[in-house]
Length: 613
Image 1 (cartoon, rainbow, N blue to C red):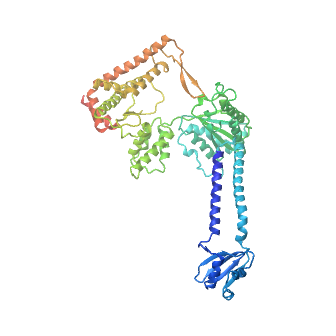
Image 2: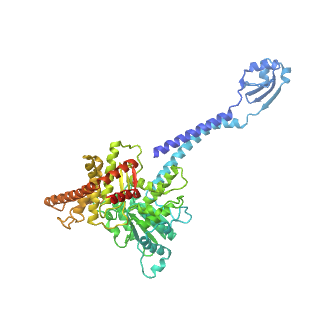
Image 3: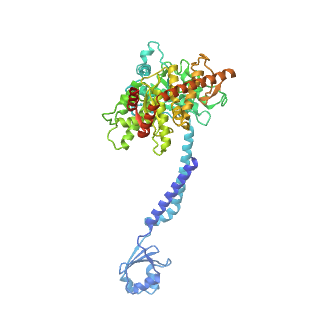
């Protein structure tokens, strides 16, 4: 960086030098070229009567002819101008008839020329060294400011950032109630202190990504009208030892000066992971930063109006010292929104977008279970972009429904064209999924069937629950297993062969069957026992493997039970498809023709076939 700035300064100085040289040349060079003549030529022209006026300035002689042209010459230094002309044979009578003007050589150019030869190079070199010293001083200042915290300030007086309140955060009723106490304390701290109450020093927001943790923290600052210092956990740690701890000290010192205030540390798990992993030794920079955070939070006086708020989606990897009373002793859990919350979130993000009359926000909320607030915001944005691409004036229900597929599976791959044979196989595959799901108890209803490629999927069957579920029964798991095998069994039944299209379905089915045996205790043979312990390295934050706490004999039984679940689900799937073979053909043919079948049309097809027999 220093060499880059030095090169830039050098180029700047050279550019200034070129500009000064150009100005100097332009100022001192005449616009019209003047010819130079000898003194003898001047004498001859005077005798011939061609000269009108002569101006003598020092040794320089400027000559003006009768026709207006000009010339210049130089007189002899030892004698006067008139004596020089007489010596060259000029007639004195002719000389008297010419206007001769003598000037002293004391003009600006007389002094500027010798001075500029010395002064201009000196100025250029002085400017060059001044820029170098200024850069060196700036580098030294940056070195001293390296340990300054890089927190962004929101909510300060005069700050132009948009203020957010609890009204801008949809639902999250329980989380708001917890945080309203924080707001009340920041507004009226004496009310709590007089009662001997101590407000929590740290508030930890826990929840999946995109659920609104940062938004909720900003809403607290907006409601309390206090400065809000926002920094990410990764911004504390640098490659230099001690920088993270220095930034923690600076951040807390700044917040105390602005009290009452809020410090918000996003992604706390970046520096707050469990210590003692053996990675980096006792002087690991991340651990030193964490130690400084713990020290600063312990150092808060009882009446200090500074609240530390943090957010993480991995509370399980945090160091226990962070979670003890006196530090982050209040924990607010933020879950994925339910259907009513999703409807409110969609309405908030729909403000400012021209929604058509047929836009049904409730239907969109019902079709998006498992979506976070960020997903719903992206959904509304994608719908608006799609409507603009189609040159529509309003966002209709069609754009909203299509944006759900785009957020879930990715954009439509129009270049992925299937052959007639592949198209037929894909139609029977997806029809098999849909039919098995429709005729099994406890299976989720089919919302949409499509053989249009999206993302990595060549086709898909969209199944969504009729209502929010928090618990799943064994019979529902078994129905889901059969539904996952619907495409595989349909291919084998109709074509007598199988393709690679069922690979992802088989992977999901095998994983689900193994969970039924090892995690959920739903195997009659093995009973209610959980097998296997996951090993997790907290500094990486992901599972690396499983510690087997069972024998080889039990492992063989687990494999047998997993295979048994798969075989029973396959037998049930084949039975349904054989019984509903005509309906399978009808749905597959309609799907191959239209490429997409919505819920209403699919249920109509199923209902007509049931009535017929």
